[in-house]
Length: 255
Image 1 (cartoon, rainbow, N blue to C red):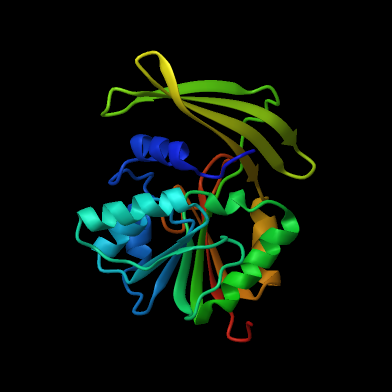
Image 2: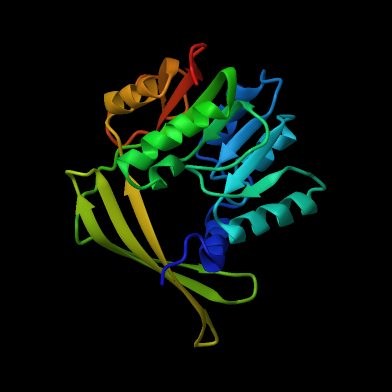
């Protein structure tokens, strides 16, 4: 019934966050990864908003995503720029890779799409198993501040083909005990007054307390854990709602 980052969702993402768009994360990750000699993996790479600029900066980066539509968009963009990168379609919490990586990155809160605490902890363990000894995991997380269970919103975008895509968001769950918000996103594409395409997406978002996530990282064999708010290195978080970037190393005793 529900898609996960299907064709219309991908089109909206590329319209609202085109290549070159940055929350500050592109510049931050470029700086943090500039000295990495080996391979980097972006988990949840989508259509390449972060991956492609990092590749252009000389970082040896690959990407994994569970959305075929997003990966197709990324491949088109790479081809338009005469660039190449290995892309894999797989689950972000349990992918299969032949080689280990010197760094694994998950920008823009994408890790919060992993649903369920047990699966999230398993994912952190899985990332450690795919890092070289001393390799780094860098993850962006934020704590929501809007807990309105009746939240709804509508946005629209006009395409280059004179079509209009309307996105309606309706929150269906706000579970403070389990730290999860779920919304249903309905995409509709209209042309000359006619509905030509529609898509439904279930959008679950989990969150973690600042110290809670540190403990989760420690439990899965990471150390040298740091936190940086709003894409400024070692800028300590002071408010909920700030984007917090956690950086941790696979411990030498790690898996």
